[in-house]
Amino acid sequence: MSVQERKQRERADRERLIVATARELAEQQGWDAVTTRRLAERIEYSQPVLYSHFRGKREIIGAVALQGATEMAAAMRAATSAANGSRDRVAALARSYLDFAEHNPAVYDALFQLDGGLTYAQEDTPEPLKDAFAALMETLSEVAGDGVHPGLFTETFWAALHGLATLTRAGRLLPQDAAQRVELLVDRLAVV
Image (cartoon, rainbow, N blue to C red; front, side, top):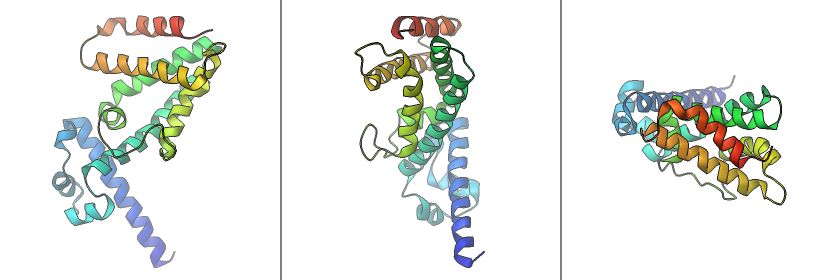
């Protein structure tokens, strides 16, 4: 391995460490606790080292969001691949999305609530975000219905899932009714 390759590998390792530490701190204490000073202390590098990777917290949030989008897409695909039939795939998709949001609140916030400097629904949208949307659309396009644009249907269904995730987390919906909400969403929106 050349010196240049070793330096690139070390740089990539430091970047992964910064992102993992930011994510861990955000999951434990919330995004307000994530500062470059705290991150530098936790990973035992100086703040200038952090700034050599990320210009600030906004870019770190964006990196966590991209990592989360990749994980969310994988979780949804795994859930839908284990289901049989369109209805079961849509229900599995909805449950896996809501489970991801519940079990990864800081990542979910990085993806959909905080400014990570990422563009959504544009030509320059980063590939992990496009892939997460594609993971939704792969299943939802099956049940969009005749004459309904699959992308628009996916956006609408996703908005409903996001609303359920956000309202549940805020304590605005009774947790014991979560399964019934998924069933209602699938039965009323999806043409199966």
